[in-house]
Amino acid sequence: MKAIQSDITRLEVDAIVNAANSSLLGGGGVDGAIHRAAGPELLHECRLLGGCKTGQAKITRGYRLPSRHIIHTVGPVWRDGNHREPELLASCYRECLRICVDRSLRSVVFPCISTGIFGYPKDRAARIAVETCGSELFAELEITFCCFNLDDLQLYQQLLSCES
Image (cartoon, rainbow, N blue to C red):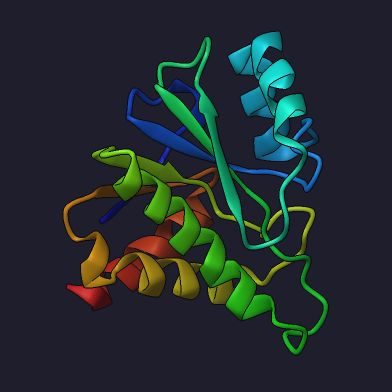
């Protein structure tokens, strides 16, 4: 596992993860950027998926992105940590990784799920991401955390250095 600071829409990997809303029809932040970069074909395919529940994930083609696939997952909205938020966030990562294994994908890039408009505290979300993705079940996958800003990158790098 590693962390980088980059634009997730420019990465050439098997799959990037979209921190989506439950409609899967685009939104702000990472979700909006991915939809804009992938083009209108993505919106058409997402309409056929019938949405996605919190903690679950669905896969589409990457269309105009360098990534072959997009795995859409819906993270929890942070309330106070007592409404299954940690369990649901961990489920997002597990479900995305399960799709990678089922599809024989080798590389996946995650954004910081739920930490934008959904308000999940960044340190707690990063810890869940690193712990969940560090499972031996996913050891064959090349897992990257793509951070938008330097503070997020440093947080992930610190957690990853503790994992080694």
